[in-house]
Amino acid sequence: MKPLLHDQHLHSSFSNDSDEDLRKYFIEASKINIPYVMTCEHLDFATFDGTNWIPDFDNLIKYQKELKKEFPNITPLLGLELGYKKDYLDDTKALIEKYDFDLIQLSIHDGKYGDFYFPSTFQNKEIEVINYYFDLMEEALTIYPDFDSLSHIDFGFKTMVQINPKYKFNMFEDRIKKILKMLVKLNKPLEINSKVNDVLNNIYIENDSNYHYDDHLRYLLSLYKECGGTKLTLSSDAHKANRYRLDFDKHIKTIKEMGFNKLSYFIKRKEYYYDI
Ligand SMILES: [Zn+2]
Ligand SMILES: [Zn+2]
Image: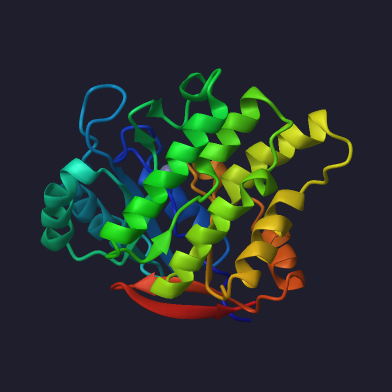
């Protein structure tokens, strides 16, 4: 039997917003014979708390080497979740050059209105803020194409849905299509983020009887396909080991049903495919 797909978007205590011990992900992976554990820690400059979030990669790499001894069947991989900030691109590039990364995921986390994680950022100006969020994503894809996968395209959107569940992704179809087409042109995969889907599913199921658990995901996949997209990654964005590979089986089933037959993964920033 071929090994299960590894989870490429995990946060541990090397990210400012997680206190999980990296070792716990190795335990989870070893239970089901998964050959890789990739962390994807946050690099975010000038965050909402007034600090720069820069992982301590020297100690992270040291710890990965210790874990490799304890879990000889697992290869540790080094990912980075890059929170795009136009004013810090030089610092970003310097850090990316300094370490031997396996995967760079591009994310839009915050901007002039605040952090898109917090509903207060959207309060009373949801449409204005989500349009700005899409503006930033377009800007990032235009001026910073040195990444491997686009993370959680719906990260800001899932926060505005927390304010009002009437919002649906198709209300912003033109904006999303433009971004998906840019991504296809760059030949980079779209990340399917099972944490975002989990948040959205819970809100929609509680508030809208017409919306089923993966309608949002199916819509995103159909739009991506329409735009010529074929490349996907699937990740949990776990900040706790009990969220490792969150709903992967359900997601893979839907992804297959929507006509995709492979998922991308990265080692030394080279793309490989996992048949589903
Ligand atoms: Zn993120
Ligand atoms: Zn993340």
